[in-house]
Length: 123
Image (tube, rainbow, N blue to C red; front, side, top):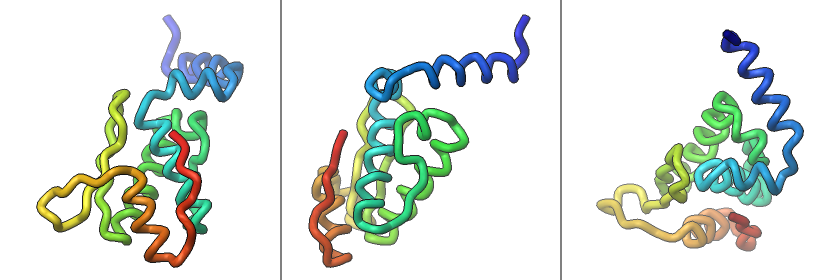
């Protein structure tokens, strides 16, 4: 029976062999959203790690990236709800009694507060 380290190495080798497009399909909504959020926030100059689905697929990297993304949005008065499934991330105005906003609206708020144009938001 394979031990945990052997299983992780095998999974890593299989992931390395996959194209970015294949990884995007495996990653699901949250990994894709979080990776895309980090890329868009980086385009605004906010320095988030974990920019690709591959980087976000690994649990330790995902937690770091997800935390960084949530913390940045929080600084701009936005709460992001990230899930582990194929459910898309959800965005809320902090302290508004839970008013949900679209992803584009969340990025528009950040861009406006920074005085920068809306970044490209991929999914």
